[in-house]
Length: 213
Image 1 (cartoon, rainbow, N blue to C red):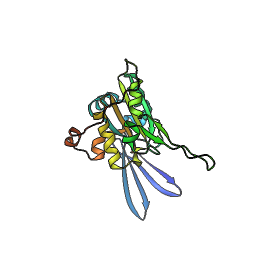
Image 2: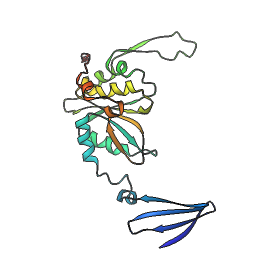
Image 3: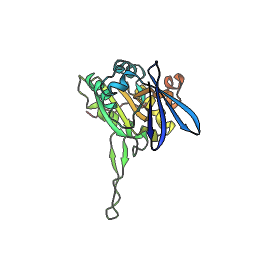
Image 4: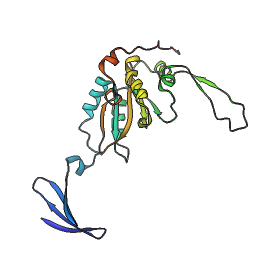
C-alpha cells in the first residue's frame, strides 16, 4: 500500500510495512527514510490507559524520591498524583522558582522579606519549616507527605541532592520533582539524577524534627 502526500509543497511517499511501522521517504535532493513505531497507547490515547501505575506506586515506596519527566502538553502527571492520593498521601505543592534554599525553607525556620513597593519599611517575617509544619498537621490515618516540586529543572545539583536525601531525614516524606519533559510520562530515582551514591545516602545526617502541636 503506497500513497503520495504533500507537506508544504514537498512531495512525500508514504509506505506501510508489515511490521506496523510507517516509513516516510522525503524526496528532496537525496532520499532519506524515517521509521516511527507506534504502540497501543498511541492509538487509544495516553491519558486513557496507564498500565504502569502499579510500578509507579512500588517505585515511590522503594526509592522515596523520584525525578519525573512529563509530556509538554501537561495533564498526564495528574493520574499519578491522584493514585498517590488514593493511597492515603497528603501533598505539599511547591514551585522551584522562588523556593530559595530547599534545606532552609523545608526543614528550618526561615525569614521572608515581603515586597515593600518602595513606600513601606523593609520587614522580615519568620516562617516555620514547611515540611515539619505540614507533618505536624497530618491526620493519624495519613500515610505520609508527598513534596511535589514543579519546575525542578532550574535547581542546582546540590539542591537536587538535598531533595534526594530529604526522605532519609524525614522518613514520612516522599519527594517528586518535575525535572524536565519527555514524549511520555517517565521517572527515575532522584539520587541518580543528582549523582548521589548509596554511601552518601547512608551517611546523611539530619536536624531534629520540630513539633508545632
